[in-house]
Amino acid sequence: MHELSSRIDLIKLVAHPARIAILEELIKGVKCVSDLEGFLDLSQSNVSQHLSALRHAGIIDYFVDGRLRCYFLKNPLIPDLLEILKKDYPDELPGPECCPVTKKGKYHGDRKK
Amino acid sequence: MHELSSRIDLIKLVAHPARIAILEELIKGVKCVSDLEGFLDLSQSNVSQHLSALRHAGIIDYFVDGRLRCYFLKNPLIPDLLEILKKDYPDELPGPECCPVTKKGKYHGDRKK
DNA sequence: TGCATATATTCAAATATTAGAATATATGCA
DNA sequence: TGCATATATTCTAATATTTGAATATATGCA
Image: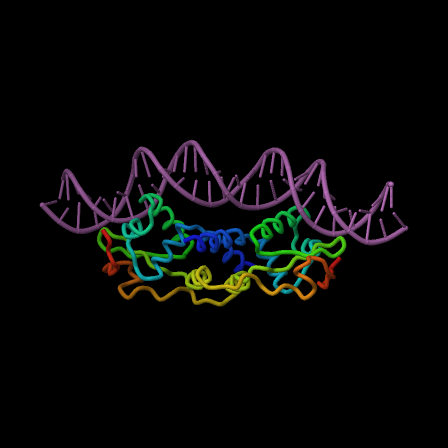
């Protein structure tokens, strides 16, 4: 599954604190690079590298305004991903009926071999 | 933000084709290791390593049934993540008003410095 | 034109991830 | 008890990621 593996790559690329922070800013609206440098606590070069990686993956894009590069969010999957990072979840899913607590029980899956 | 960074780590760990494939199976129900070996096309040792990583991250757990280890999904964030991997999205988000096409325009963000 | 600002790229070192091979452990059954 | 099955762990080599430092490029303005 072609599409799936490219989404996995996308998520892998994004799963980095600095990149998430960048995207959290961009989801609020357009930001230029030096603004992002301020929000994050990263070197100019490093911010630029992260932006470059995100851009090559088609996650963000920019327009030019004079000397500024104004970045904005492009990939529609990102807001959903950021949502998941913030959303409230219960501690754990309900276990299978057999016996999640004792960890002893009968396997009832579809055995293949 | 303590919680956020641990979720980023979680997503990073999961962003791997074999691990996604494992989780796609487990979301359907309990599976033992040799079943997973069959579904995926991976060596026993490698499947076990992925399971171990997922388990240490609290994403899955298992119960024992004789010689079988029966794994199941534990972390409630995972179904949402798998959903995002399959969901249909438009090509791109609507660009900022100024001029996504020409990539020329006025920056209207909140300049910080 | 030349300089300052804004941003990108290249390079290299440090570190992390991944996979296979070999080996270890645990369980049920003869 | 001993063997076969099911699974885990350890070690290692290959590869990928991340970062800082240095340098390059592009634009507006004096």
